[in-house]
Image (tube, rainbow, N blue to C red; front, side):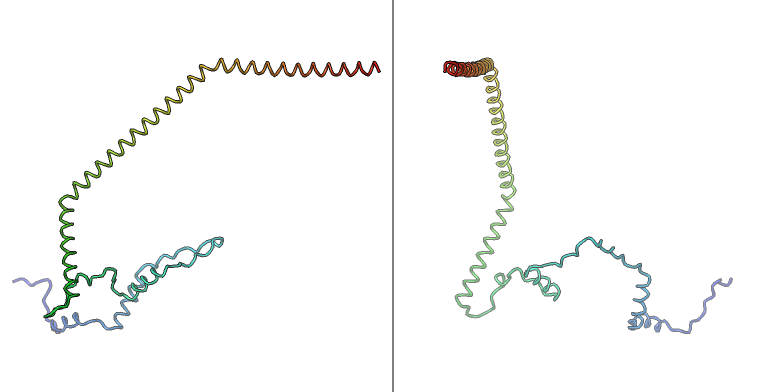
Length: 209
């Protein structure tokens, strides 16, 4: 029988002591040493570059009282109580409940029943109602688009009619403008002639005197 290349040797340490050492929690000094080694092996955290000297300092945040209260609640790890759940809680067991308790229980039961009916109707007819509403909106959109197209066509028709009338009246307008200029020229000529007559009359009066 051939001998094994890895001879089995008898260990003097029992397996129970090894398992006990493994299961034993580490001591605080061991934890601190492990944390130091981990921190040394981690890369340094990147630091943000400093701001330019010409830039103004960042303003301090100004939170509203509601935000401050919410941050305080999160810091103190208090549960969020935004929804009042007391209305959904069953009343305390009592052999002879009073009228207010019965009224509150009836209101809660009616609310839950109507809510269940509303959700059932929404699940059954909600999809169809949504499709019908979308179809109605599409009809309104098509009608508005048609009104826009009709209005544009009316504006173009008015502009074409205006341009046609201007082209038809162009010769008449040009003739009136020419007559107006000729009339202004005649008025100026009459004014010049009147001035000449006045000057001649004034000279004749001076010569006779």
